[in-house]
Length: 312
Image (cartoon, rainbow, N blue to C red; front, side, top):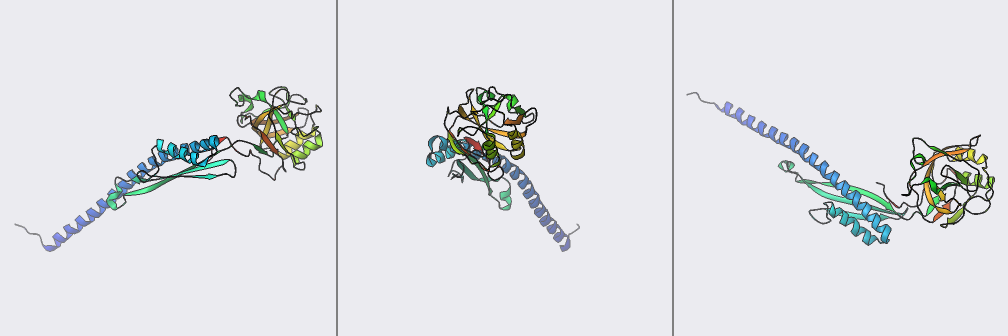
């Protein structure tokens, strides 16, 4: 019978070692692919949980003005969505930032139990997600527009009617030259009820040389006292305010303050057909509004706080 010498047996041993190493590498690669896919699935679920927890926490703070209750609401929402703080290695953190409303940030960290990579010594890895929601009563309009819009722009649900909130087809506002808007298509100039409206004053508000600080109360008259279009102001709006998002006071048919809404100014024209072209970005809110004016390129133009919004 034929026999194997030592060199043949050595070669077979080397092949077995190489096969074992190759198999280990293949298993590790397959494990990384499968466990990686499972990790992405967990991250999606975890991000959804963080988003909902942040909104729950911000909403609770809006209703209670209490960080402890807001933290509990955020942790409860995270648990409802499968991530309970302190269970199976899950860590839920809740933090607050009060610089612009109440921003609630929720972080969720949880281990992903791997199914295949333990073969190469990787039992699990951490998955981390964060989300931030902001809440607060909108109370300050920085760089507010010096004109007023009609409450008739909005549906009963508070949202702008389609023709007034379409960014692809901005609307030309300005049909009459009265003290107040007499229909949804119209608008009027205002100095926020601080006295008789004149062209130079409103031009100064637009350009930032005239500073107004005024808190508007619900039902307060903020229309003009001297019906007029103030033609030169349209060109000032076009020059200084085009492309900006600005809070605009909303009034009833008698010019009485009803709330505010964010408005995007596309352009304006002081020609034969005088108009301010733009569209409303969102619904209107019935809330006291403090107007703060400032120079047209030197201050942020935004509402001081959101009602409730996921921002990150």
